[in-house]
Length: 508
Image (cartoon, rainbow, N blue to C red; front, side):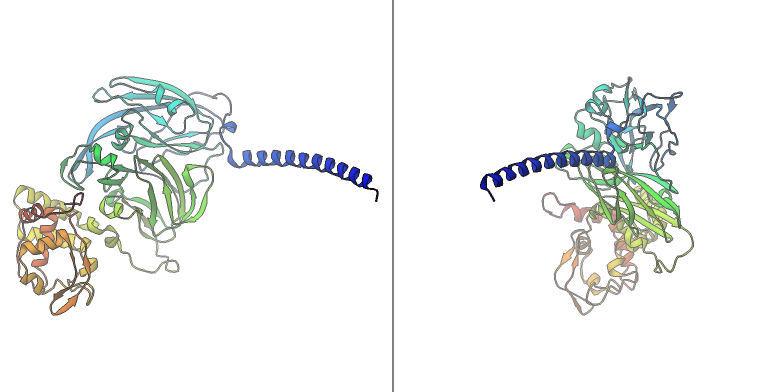
């Protein structure tokens, strides 16, 4: 072939290829953009025009309740009235804290609107408040999420409006300086912006929001506890809680469902610091709308919920019993309070689950639910100085079964070669009361011999128990299973605790 012809043909070929590639790139780009917009929605597709009809007063609910679905096919003007209240409430039994709240509860009121709605937001700060406050709604497209328009002094009201352009589940919180302190005191909540078609129907919906709290006193230390800024800066939480209080979702406050029902949990994390590893013991999430957005993952065991973030979880409950909600950063559940319950009623489904329930294991040192009145009654008697030996034994029995029996067994016989017995124990006979108290507070490691058998295990320190609780447990042990019948007072425990040198930062 003529060399000039070859060169010419190559040039034509190159030009054709260039034209072809350019056209293909353009087509691919258009297809990608179309696919992206279809998949993600976004604010560009969230404006459905001006509000229609008469203004609607938003229904707001306290956790764990959720307002009803919107059930509207048009954008509306929705009026939200929210009051900031600073109030003292119980954070744990006998422990009080001054919370700063949206609506008088922690978390704040749940809000539910439709994508495309225009929200007229009224923020009122109660005249008795000591601090100014505002609100940053993560559902807002605008400066500060509304914070710049809602700074409100005590005894004043601020009003601003926004259009909800993005559907999803969004956190709101106070953003007044120091922001972290306002959030740490409980100023957060959730706002749900439904897609135009609404969410698929389910049988039950609940509102669960985690937060971490920083008190001057240690975990469960009684009385009114102030906020500890240094602990907050160091992210050393005293409490990690669902819905603002230890026990907010247990016992009579437990969530409830029936076998065969589908449950949707709107899960938020106010922070201010800690990421939640949210898990329901005994369930697998059928769907998790991660980060509160549009897309979902299926068959999820544990989902991360960041501080200032959220998730929607859905699952069908197939068997009766009590499911335990936890932050699976597990010391937070059993030693800082991040624990709740979902009680499922209905007939046994033996083909799905045949075993017995083990609530008292999961409840750990919180003790069994049925014994709570006994514990609180004896605690009151001890404070009044009227508690008897029999009172201590009764309370100690409940506490032992909830805290100690996992290793030492309900009958005190332990597990041969693994956990030493407390029944007819020559260790208890040979050691002073002070030594036994010290073992409970500080734990024990290394080889010991009990009733002629050698053990080399680890007993962890139980310094998280208060003086009353340790005194009652030991009085119960000393008066059970053939032991010598001693009585231990809270004052004795306090003396041993006070004389115990512990590493800096360790619980005492």
